[in-house]
Length: 189
Image (cartoon, rainbow, N blue to C red):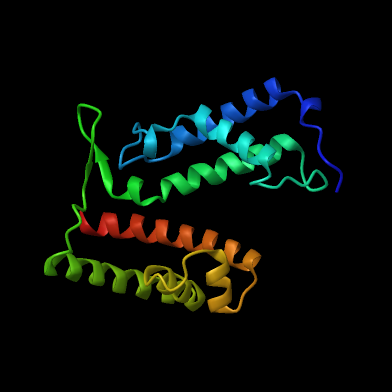
């Protein structure tokens, strides 16, 4: 592949359009348990776009011009970076306070027996629900919940699927879990 001349791109247009996407995506996320929270490290949409551009130019995130245009690639990297921030330990285990500080909600403590019982009960209920829909969904959820498969590649290997099949499976799993949550929320009211 020939070297890329990064100076030939309209960076103002690419940056602006990627920023619109990043802002929209950022606003839809739950940061530290709040819709209006800020991402871990206080990152802004501008930071996500800047990081995506730097990682692309440095070669840390490889762009193949034959597969997509540069804007699509940058937006894909931004999406990936925001998703990684959303599932980060800092985002999941902290909540904002009224004075813009952050507190750790796990405090490094082991869960008490009641919390373990509730978790195991909820997990059993969810897995049973998924089994009725599709045993493959149940298997995937079980692997993910037990952290035996962390990413798409691990899950594909564990289940004997391709990564593309796993991506589609995770979309189905997400919809099924959302349906489960909607049904159980109303059942408990």
